Image (cartoon, rainbow over all chains, first blue to last red; front, top):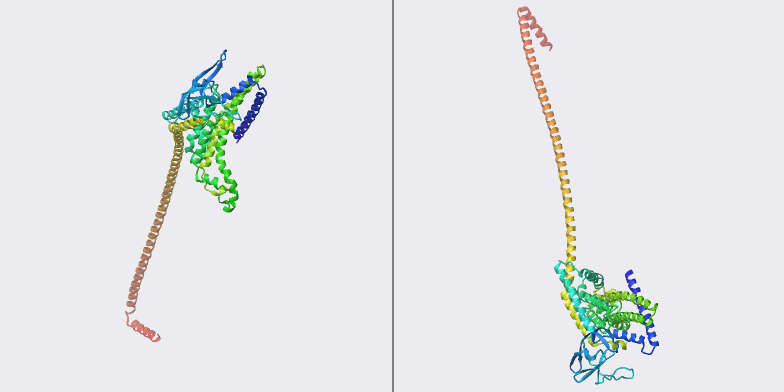
Length: 372
Length: 166
């Protein structure tokens, strides 16, 4: 109970910090219209939060104004009346138009648009690009990171499994660290929420999603600038899998709870007016639950990145003996909190997934209990 | 909301789904199953070992209790045997005593009977002897009395008198 309260307090604390600092930051940047240091920093943050078509670890500007990127180009895969595969080096980091056969493509705001040879982007009244967007299945930086994390996890846990086989069921090396976590997920997340009888079916997903989110969140805090879980596409994919597992493993009781929440506590005639309101709410709940999962993960990690980078950016804005150390200290403190958040978000995602699976797997013996 | 939708990239979504599902299935087969099985087996092993230890302890206790019980029984049996023997001894002694008493009584009785019989016989003998003696004496007296005629007549007269009287 105490721990729960602590988690709640910390989350609240974090949210407050996120919003306040974020708001402060925004207003400061808005105040200066011209392209100065602040807007450069803002652009840099925006750029960092976006996915990119090449794997660049860092970049710097030479004295003659030329940008130098350290990293590797990645394959761009487009479906535009046929498969188009080319290297992202053709974009020159978004600076030029890539000419592939007869088609020209340009990166604008992190998305690939089809343009003419000059790379003209047409806008509508709301300043939205109206150019055609080809279906984009490119291997972006995030895809590479996801793949690498997958590979890392596979070898890590395959090694752990092998070490069990070799040592008569006792983990060695890194397994000593991971085994308690696996046991924690089993004993404190899966079993209490899903129940002794059915938890085994869900364990692989819970373990995979926990370690995946955790490792990727942690990588997001490293200076190599990975930011996967702050892309809504990734969290949508994760939440969608939770959603599908929940509803495909739903028992009769689960569906009964949605479509007949009052059970036999009332005559059917009395239930009709209530159900006109109740059933839509319950059905909406099916979708809101995973939606809250995806927004929570996305927003927390994104906010964390924005706060952290803003604080680092402040160091360059202040350039004073008082301000810069202060913002450094703050950035350091936030980094520590972000380390916790990385774990916390993985935990919350896993915990809530387990909770939803628990709803889906529930089997009541007494239907009267549904009444309340 | 529009910004969120604008950020959504179908390509990244596609790759994330594919890669994550692949990871999930690979890990399930090659990592989580073996790991969870190993952990379960180990836990069961520990549980079994504990159970076995507990069983052994209980068995030991049972054995001890058995031993105690057997010892107690043996002791009780010994006591009862001793008691029985004592009782038997006493009863034998008592019986012997009784028998001896009876025998003694019988002997005394027989002796008394014999004495009585002897006494009776002696008395009868004495009586017979007295009778014989008296007859002898009477014979002698009568012989003396009937030696002269006078006396005989007197006697007859006396006797006749007696007869008429009676």
